[in-house]
Length: 266
Image (cartoon, rainbow, N blue to C red; front, side, top):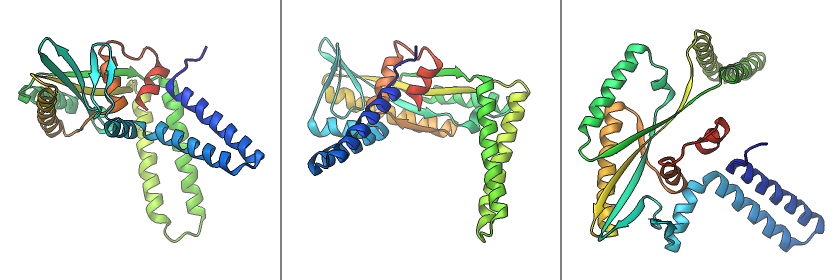
C-alpha cells in the first residue's frame, strides 16, 4: 500500500480542483468558473510556496499556533515554551551542504571536518547540530544519471544539427554537464555510495518574557549563522513555518522510509 504523503495529498487536491474547473466550464456559469480558477490557483501557490506564504498569513492575522505545551508565534520563526516564570524560545537554521562539499576527496573531507570543529568551537552560545542521512539506492541513482546524460547528449546533437547562430554557449554548457554526469557515474561504478543529507542547527534562549526569549534566540541564531557560514563556506539560513516545524518534529521522529524522506525534503 502506498504511503499517503503530503505531496500525494496535494496532487489529489489539485486533481480534484482541475476536475471541478472542467465541470464549471461545461456548465458555462461564469461565476463558478472564476471561483474554481481562483481556488485552483491558490492551491498551486500554497503547494509550491506555502513555506513563504503561510508565515506571512499567520503574522498578518496574529495567529498563535498551539502544540500541546509549545506555541508558535505569528512570525512562525521559533518554538516557545513557558516553564515556571521563564520562557524558552528555540530557533532553527538550515545548512545547505552542497554537492561540492559531499564530493570532495578524502583529504579535502578531512580538512572540512577540521573546519567544522573550528566552527563549533567558535560558537559562544549552546547549539545543537543535527544531520539526517539517507543512503541513495545505487541502481536508481545510476539510471537517473544516465537518463540526464542521455538528455544532454540528445539536446547537444539537436543543437549541432541546427542553424542557430547562438548555439555555441549552450553546447559548451551541455558539454560541462555531460562531463559532470560522467564523473558521477565513474564514482558510483568505483564503489562510492551517494548520500542525501539534511543539516540543521537548533539554538535555545531563555527570557522573563516571550519577546526577551525570542530576541535572545535571534541574536544567537545570527551569531551561529555568521560563524558556521564563514568557517565552512556553506549557506546557512533561518527556517520558518513548515520547514521549522519539520525540524521540531525531527527532534522526536525522523523520516522512516525513502519515500517519506523525499516527501519532506523536496
